[in-house]
Length: 315
Image 1 (cartoon, helix red, strand yellow):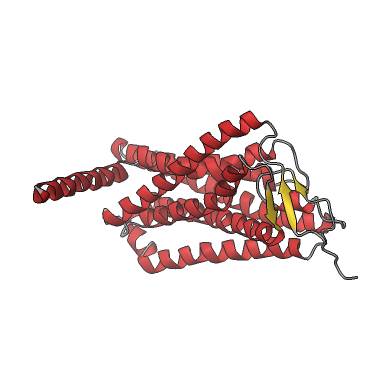
Image 2 (tube, rainbow, N blue to C red):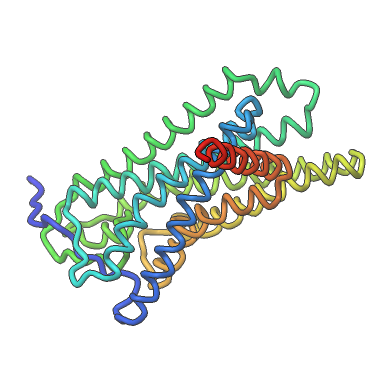
């Protein structure tokens, strides 16, 4: 039987139906998105100008910042515009692209965080072999693997949704197109698709989370044998990684490690991994990392010196 698709666009319910609340949210999330862009761009600029690329940790941190910008940009601009719009619509094609983008960049971020945990494990538990294990060629291959893994995951999610018929209704109780809210609108039985979606997303989220927990547990046990100074430096770095992992994976596990159901709290939970985590990442990594702060100070001093030089030449 041929699938019938009469839906050409979807309508978002958004974060709230209260106009005053939406106006406040517009200001708040516009500020958050600005912080995401500036903070992550500053991290990338610092890594590039501070010549930190040679360190695997900062090599992956640079791409984590890039993914954070892309990830939040898939949903945040549309959400911010819709907060002041009377009609919160998105075309069917736009919805599928947004669904692809959310899962592509979200899954890529999960894999990058996992690789960063492996990098810390090697640096702390096998320091003498660190530069051999984490050489540039292997780092490039691991980075490529994160992008390929994210692409394969998102392609599967989109392929499961596009083959479903949508013949109305077309209202999504969310602020962006995600799998579970969209599956509710399909005019066919989606039980099997829901199971596959949960298995796909849930396995990646929970599997990566377990790997991360094991990695950091081994790291913390190993730190007990190190000197107080070495322990303090390692804990400073790993502490920032652990904080990001908890903030990001907690909501992701809640959203995707469950059957094909939706809750009213989903929108608030989704804000954590689509907006809050990309915003906090630069703050967490800079406040907890002396090397990044030093590189930022050098960048600032260089900028001030260049401005003074331009002013003096102009005079």
